Image 1 (cartoon, rainbow, N blue to C red):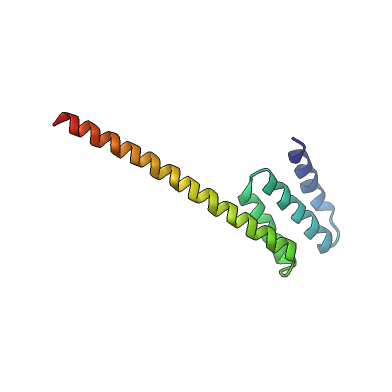
Image 2 (cartoon, helix red, strand yellow):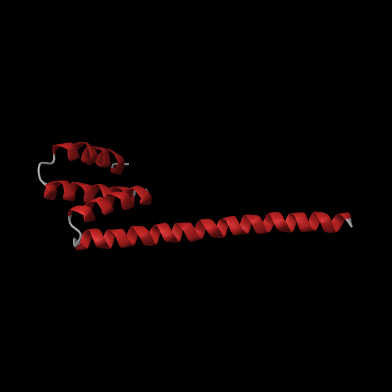
Amino acid sequence: SLALPTIFLFAASLANSSSPLQQREKIYLLAVGYYRTGEFSRSRQLVEQCLEIAPDWRQALVLKKAVEERIAKDGVIGIGITATALGLIAGGIAAALTRRH
């Protein structure tokens, strides 16, 4: 995938950013890259850095909302999978106990 090499190039170029505006743009692009590769927590960290530099930047605010919604959605899915697994385990234990009696 071309996304990861691009992310690494942007990360390396951050050290050469002379102005806060350039740095903000590069951090934002990194955040977008991590969002697209599914690394939502890293994307959220970067977008929060952007908002420290420019708190009212609309693009960063929109990305932050999208990242947080995705993290929440993944968390709900994870909770659902865990609950299903626990239900299956409990059902298996109940069935085993019923067969013994």
